[in-house]
Figure 1 (tube, rainbow, N blue to C red):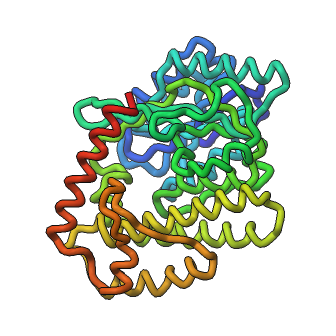
Figure 2 (cartoon, one colour):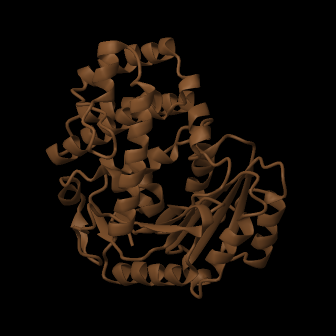
Length: 373
């Protein structure tokens, strides 16, 4: 079965749900969406089955038969995460579009409020390119952490107000543009011919990045809409999975750097935008160096692989004038991992890494307890 190509009445919000072997969790996700009181009138749900080997497709089709005015199903051969987004976007009928992973869900009551807010702004003729909302990360033992656009507990923008994106980007808070917080105006994505890389994981990073090259406006809403399941074994953000996927991360980085280089050269971006994007890609490179020099288990670390990685990317960083330093996350131990590597061609001593990890854990514990309630 494929999604219908007939012209539908435009909905307010389209939700794309990529699914692969999520038969046990998909019903929870769908239930949280269709239970919204205004779902039939305002919501479109597109489930993209990416060649699942379990009952995911049958479950999605059953829900589609129950809610034909809300849910449609696309069934396709496996092509990984980006291919599901690429398959869904041409079918999207909503004014806005958001991705919901099938192992996550939304707070149904808050979804109703979110739809009402979108309707309110649309009635005034206001269609911000980006709508930013906090999300809830649910970890081991159900421990919840609210991820907000803030720094040290301070939220710098007024909820319910539309800002110029340049005004927001000048603050340099690159870490708050995360997929679970972002809803885009569909026409923005179509105007830039948005597509994600296929065949590899972690392409949600592209969703969080490419539209920020071109978006003009952003609205902040104080609605903890998205419920992120951060405690499922085998998910792509599992540290063990990330360590096995470094080649995919570097492939994606190559694609993103090419996009950056192409669009930085054309002169169409404001200086604020160029500065923010430079910071974004500096951080991207910092993350990759961190994977090798700090996060990777010592038994897996190979000097020759790190040297090959460094020979490839360090000249790019220098050519793009990326200022890359890698301090410990706790900000207390001021030794740059990358500088240490370039000087000694080895990782920090074992005892120092152990000590640093313990300080990191303590610093994060204090930060969460004090600032992220």
